[in-house]
Image 1 (cartoon, one colour):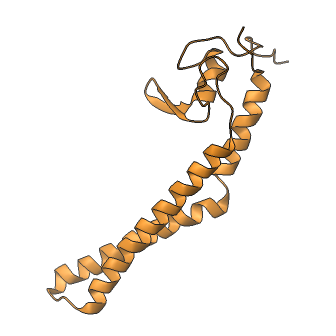
Image 2 (tube, rainbow, N blue to C red; image 1 turned 135 degrees about the horizontal axis):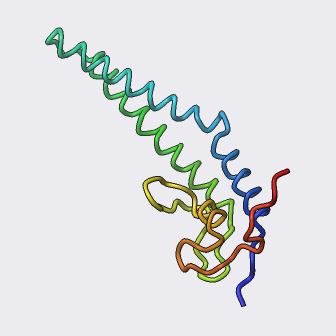
Image 3 (cartoon, helix red, strand yellow; image 1 turned 120 degrees about the horizontal axis):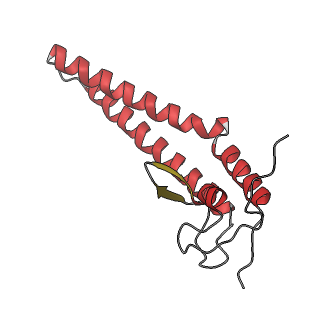
Length: 137
């Protein structure tokens, strides 16, 4: 017998997960990465237009690339840490429901697919208790 999950429980877990991913401090790293790329491209563009290579331009270019790489890895680490904090998995096969699942043309969380269909996206087991959506008045 497969343990069943409640649709409302699953929806509240998804809301908490999305809120954790979209905290403002998490996006500081994305802004830093974009700024690093802008500095690098500006330094490279100046070098191309003026045909000169100075230590300052090279330093700005490499510094911009370094800021991008560091910010990208920090944001990636934060995202992995947030995903690891949410342990909800399919009771039948153990697939983590907060990993990305590709269904159709878009990308959604496996938990979102489970809410829509009532089944696990990996093994197809029925794992949601309340299969019907509540009536809207």
